Amino acid sequence: MTGRLEAFSKWLQLKKYQLEVTLSVYMFTPNEKFIFYSVFFLLFSLTLIAMILYLPQHVQFILGRAWFYMHGDEVFGTQSQLVKSVLLQGQGTATAAATAAVKATAAAVKAEL
Image (cartoon, rainbow, N blue to C red; front, side):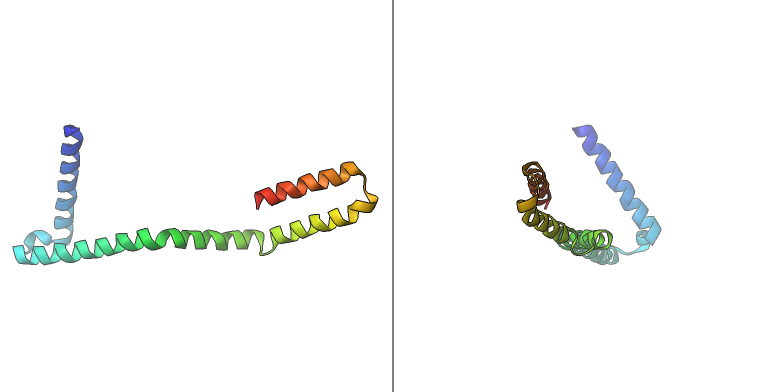
């Protein structure tokens, strides 16, 4: 456990060093560093909170749109109406086996919905 903790600590130190060198934070005075890291932490925290709160809803919305674009608006409604009409028409003329097969198909479609 201590080895992992030390490795994580070294990784964090490396990332802090990379940040300071990349953005020239190492040249700041201690007060400027405090302000910089405060603003950085604030922006990072707000971004993380926004991702946690809104990303799942956004992904669900995008998947719903993708489903709509691929399958259309009334795919399942049209299929269920078709099965119901076949069931109603098949009561008088179709055999019992055909009616049972259509009912089984209707049950499978309903289970998928």
